[in-house]
Image (cartoon, rainbow, N blue to C red; front, side):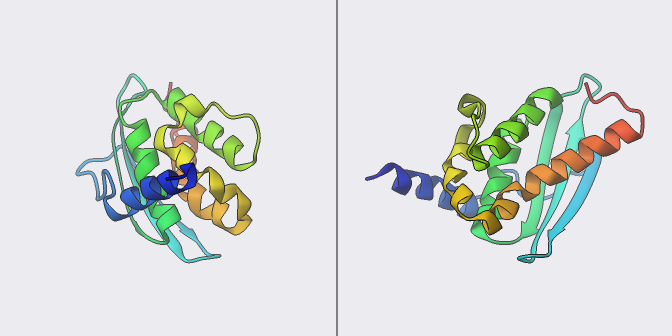
Amino acid sequence: MSLDDVYRQVVMDHYQNPRHHGHLTHPTLSVGLHNPSCGDELHLDLLLDEDGVVRDAAFEGQGCSISMAAASMFVDRVRGKKIEEARRVVASFKDLLRRREADRAILGDLEALEGVSQFPARVKCATLVMNAFEQAMDRVEAEGRDPK
């Protein structure tokens, strides 16, 4: 079995068996995004604590296997992490897709989406959840809350 086959299996597992799928009962923030180029829709709920930790996160949406698997992988990766570490996950993933030097150790299963970089139209699918997260963090900062 090749590495590409393993990565495909990881992506399909997250797509068919998404982690943390649904809504949070009392999220700190909720962001909904739509990718007009392909029709993917995503809703991200975050529960942040006063110490700047993503205590819980969940997503719901409709879209291709790439966007839904990326959402599952990202939410799974950032739950329980400080916001600054979650931001590093976003930055490293985007670097990976831009074929730049990336901190692969921080990515976890997200590394399985590296091949998406070969398909520029699909990069938007893979980063939809991260764009939602960044919008949420921008909102926190605009409201004067300290996201740590």
